[in-house]
Image 1 (spheres, rainbow, N blue to C red):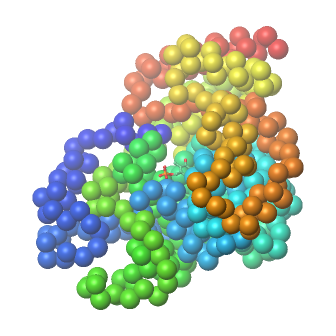
Image 2: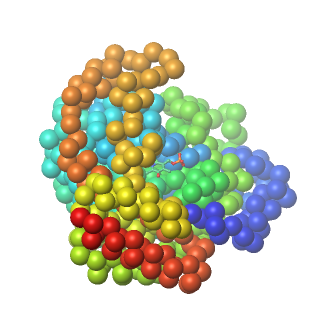
Length: 400
Ligand SMILES: *Cc1c(COP(=O)(O)O)cnc(C)c1O
């Protein structure tokens, strides 16, 4: 997945142009910038690649999620449905708006189970946020139908699946708003950065204003602009955008490498009876950033990950025991360990969920192993990894 493996001359050239002009900010300074508008160019490239009318970039993926929800009018006491398997950014963004993250079971797609989402919808629900974890997507058709029926906003977190698609549409463009991260370990990187895409003009305009203190961006005198509503500062800098601009031009090359490596690692696993691959919903194309599979039992999965890492297949994950990505390790969320006081609405919202069991999620997550696909591997390294995967998994399956 990591674009950081591929930092080179193109990135340097884009950054150098920003350094030469000396304008490190995305807005204003028209005279000084010698025609360089890296952030705007990045946004145009993002919208064009993702086939949406609008794209807006911000300081991180977490900021993109926050701005997306704020732009859709989500605020105090609103409920946002998120999966039990995700990065902590999902609930952080929800909480930062005073809204309530409602955890919902995943299925064999490793993200939101539509039937569980349907059950979790209440009169406070405002949005459903599938998180396309580890390179593949939620069952977007079913989720969109639920959102349409119930008047909810569908916000796709495509931070880990940029470049994948569903029913011919780039991930992120299927729902109402899609979010990306360009942090240092994502498929393409800005160092730090994020972006959102949408076809909805109102959402876009709100995002554009909200992420820059509510500035209306009318005219070219920043100081004279008005502020139609409250905002915040989630701006990306020109330096970061310059790196991203070089990287987005390379996205499709990176995806080809990922797919090639993925196919070579997946081929031997498909011959092992007992291993099943994570389900990609019909109509979906992964971005191949991770190889994800299920073992028959929790013990076998835990053991497989340990032995794979010990044998040199680094960057294999057993998320079930991981500190960041699975609900069982989110004591700070469940206990609302906040530095300051938390609103009663959020307290009540979290209290309501405290007895909920996620046995369905545990059943999938406990058996999942995910191996990161790197871009920089040589042919030989990929072959070695494929052989080790086949050998170790074969041995573990025999022990059942
Ligand atoms: C990385 C990531 C984010 C947050 O992105 P940052 O740019 O690191 O803030 C959000 N969601 C998912 C699924 C991610 O992997």
